[in-house]
Amino acid sequence: METFTIKSSCLQREYTVDAYLPGKHLSKNPGKFPFVLFNDGQDLRKMDIEGILKKLSQKQDVVPQLIFGIHCNDRRIREYGTGRQPDYKGRGDLASAYTRFILEELLPHLKLRFPLSDTPENSAFAGFSLGGLSAFDIAWAHPEVFGIAGVFSGSFWWRSHEVREHDPDADRIMHDIVEKSGQSNPNQRFWFQCGALDETDDRNHNGVIDAIDDTLDLIQALEKKGIPKNHIHYLELPEGRHEPATWAQAMPHFLLWNTGLNAGLNADFLERG
Image (cartoon, rainbow, N blue to C red):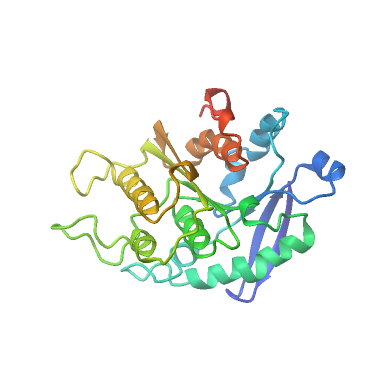
């Protein structure tokens, strides 16, 4: 792991970034590599991402990836969210500035420093919980940059209005953004993970927790916008919780899927928490 800092003019603060690099591959291959940016990148350390990557590297057909973990700070609830608007409590008011930081400051810096792919199909943005919402929002808004989004326990409950009893599933901002978007990019790919124990809330009383409902409803919205079903993958872990241990369990699944190794998505490569 290599750790560095980058100063953001967009947000007037310094960011810590962890870079996980496939060293032996970098020295042997002069080309450019697929990469994944992760919001809440500090959690990758808790997941032992280096151990996960080492195990995956033992598979001969695994494509090497560059992984970057962007650390958050105490402004997380303001910087993550949806760039179009804050939620009804004003949270996420810095999300549009965070998008500019990613596109205008961080990515150019990374591409000068590391051999990153220039193609959207090899460029992914992922995150956990609210960081997953942010990653999805940025990827959806910029398919010319990110062809892939990965969301672990995404906060798709993000709302423009408090829950209305007569229509509890209304006002979800990300769903509204997708539904009202113009033409979608059918080349984008999306990976979602939920845990059956992510939470206990069930606002519409249908027997399904909100985290799963919100994710499946978003998948349905993507399909209605023309995203092919084979470009969307959903992983539900029966014992999964809203915590790094569960996301560590799902991480090999995402990293294999990210480089197109769908045949490798089996129990052997799902870490046990």
